[in-house]
Image 1: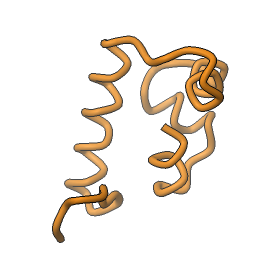
Image 2 (image 1 turned 180 degrees about the horizontal axis):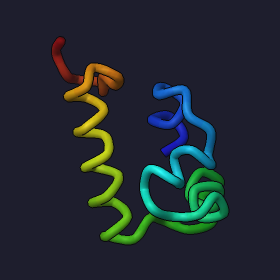
Image 3 (image 1 turned 60 degrees about the vertical axis):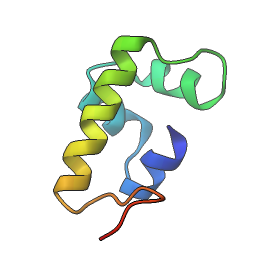
Image 4 (image 1 turned 45 degrees about the vertical axis):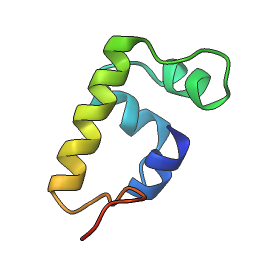
Amino acid sequence: VKGIRRRLGLSQERLADALGVNFVTVNRWENGHVKPSRLAMKQLDAFCARMTKAGKLRLPGTRT
């Protein structure tokens, strides 16, 4: 989560807003206190797909 957030240049607060969760949730994910739920992972995957399609995110192993 932290790597994706940093690649996008987002704060934890901005990522939380984009995913519909609160800042504390993103902070706990990044610090390894909890793992994202299945629903949160789906939201994160969809968000990454949108950012990739918009040309704002390039994930390792993908081609441009």
